Amino acid sequence: MTTTPTHITGVRAISIPVNDQEAALRFYVETLGFSVLRDNPTPNGGRWIELAPGEDNPVVTLEPEAPDLTRGAIAIRFTTNDAEAAHAALAAASVDTDEILRWAGVPPMFAFRDPDGNVFSITETT
Image (cartoon, rainbow, N blue to C red; front, side, top):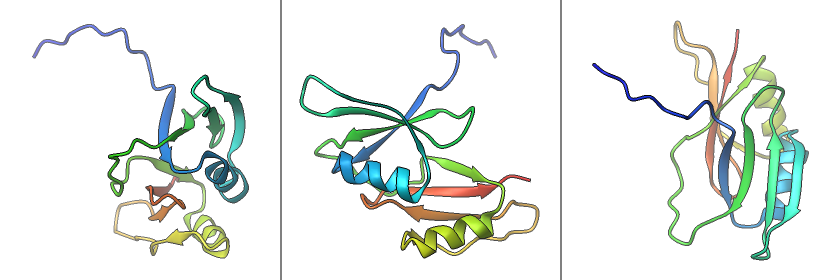
């Protein structure tokens, strides 16, 4: 198999479609604990919002959603040092979470949804 050289060197940002950027910003900062890296107006009346879920991770952006967007698939898998504690904290904050999956040979993980219905998962790193 031959490979084609690429100029792509990494992942800078992962965009999350949201209905209301201000409400989403509150959820991601106040509930999930992300840090705001940038929050600037855009020429079309929106905002360019960049968040950091932790150190040395791709940036997460909160983008105004497209009109024909379909939600549901888990596209982003976040990490935690303690799935049980992360699950308990999100449940206490009334975040829509699934039960923690515990399969032999696989790290504990669970799915959760943001207020816009985007689905994510959190996997424990060991």
